[in-house]
Length: 353
Image (tube, rainbow, N blue to C red; front, side):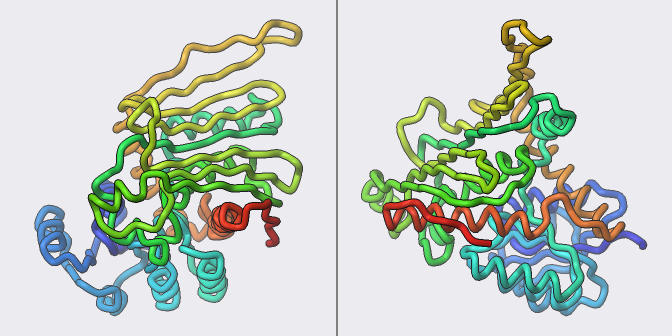
C-alpha cells in the first residue's frame, strides 16, 4: 500500500490531536478535514496544508481516494457517522465512547461485521507510555492475578468546554461517567484482561446542577457518578468520575490495581504523571514500595495520541485486529449503561451480553 489516505472528521480538541499525530506519520497523507464550524475549518486547513476541507460527512465519503477516517464528533453522531464510513469501505478510528446507548453500539458492531473493515475505538489512555509500561508488567505476571481495581477521574472545577451537547443527556448519553469515567473503566478492564461484566451498582449526584445551569444554561446530566462492577469471574472494580466537586486536585486521574503478587497505581495530577509499584521482592519479606516514576503529564498525553494513531495505521496496513476492538468498547458501554440504570432504579443491575 502507498501512503494511507485519511480524513479527520470533527476538529475539536480530540480531532486536533488526531490531526497532529497523523501529520507526524511518514506513511500517512491527510487528504481532508471536516467540521461544521467554518472558521475553525479554514484556520485548521491553513495551518495544516490539508488539500480538502468540507462541512459535511457525505462530502468526505464521496472522495475517491480515501482509506480511513478519524471520527471525532459529538456522541450522538458516533453511530451514524461510523456506520456510514464503514458502509463506504473506510476503516474507522472512532473517539470514545463507542456510542450513547448499547443499541447504537450494537448497530456499529454489526456494521463492522458486515463491512469487514477495521473499527478501532480511540481510548488514548491505553497508549500513554506509563500505562503501557504498567501493562507490560501485568502481562509478565509482575502483579500476579489482579483481583481488584479502583479507578477514577475527579475534576474539581467546571470546565468551560463542557457545555452544549455535553450537558444534554439525549445528545451525550450521560455526564462525567461517560465522558471521563469511560477512560478509567476501560483501563481497569484492560489491565485485568477484559473480563466479561456480570452486574453493577451505581449512584449519580447532581448537587451543583443549579449553580452550573446559571452559568451555562441547560444541564440534565450528573456532576458525580460512582459505581461498583462485579465481573463474571468474581473480580471487582470500583469507578468514580466527576465534573465538579470539592476534591484535592483540579484534576485527579488514577487507576489502582491489587494483585496477589503486587500492586500498582498509575495517576496524574497537577501536570505530573506517576507510576507507583508495591511489590514483594521475595517470599516472606515485607512489602516494599518502589519510588514513583514521575513524568511530565503533557508529554505523556501527546505521546498517547502518537502511539494510538501509529497503531491504527499499522492495523489498516496489516489487516490485523486493533488492540481496542469494537467488542471491548461495547462491553464498556454495557457497564456504563447499567450503572446509569442502577442509579436511576436504586438497585443492582445484571448485565447480559
